[in-house]
Length: 165
Image (cartoon, rainbow, N blue to C red; front, side):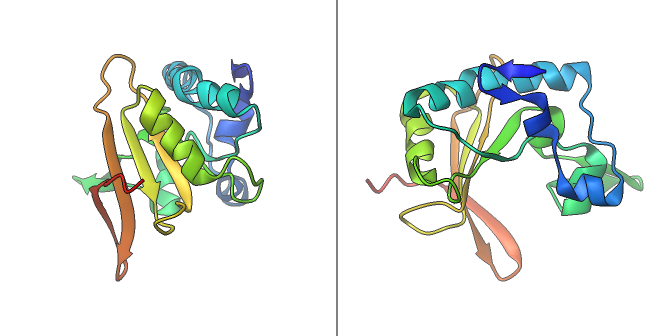
C-alpha cells in the first residue's frame, strides 16, 4: 500500500527487531491514516525537493516493539503506555548517511525551513550532521517543536534546537 508517491506502508512498518522477536507490527487503520499525513506533508515534499531517495530508518512501531527497543514510554498500573509518536503513526526517522545525498543535515534544514511539522529533532551526531532526523506530523495540531538530542551518561537529553547556520 502506498502512503505517498514514493513511500509504502511496508517501508514504514518493517522492523528487524519485530521479525526476530516475532512481534506484530501491523498498524491499525487510524495509524495508517496518520502515516499518510506524515508521508504527504513531510516525507514526500522532502523527497520531491531533493529528487533523490530518502531512507526511513524507523516508522510505525507497535507498543510491544517500542517497548522492546526502549522507545519512549512509561508504566502505569503495571501496563506499558507508549509515548513515542511512532506508535501512533505520526513520526518517521530519516537517515540518509548510508545513501549519501541529501545529507541528514540537508533534510533537517529543508523540513525546518519549509514544512509544517509537529516535532523535528536533530538526533545525536555533531554540529555538522545529525545521526538521523526525527520528524512528526499531527493533522492540524502541529507544535513546530524543534529539539536536539544528545547523550549525558546513559540518559538522552533533549534541548531546544539552536540554528547555528
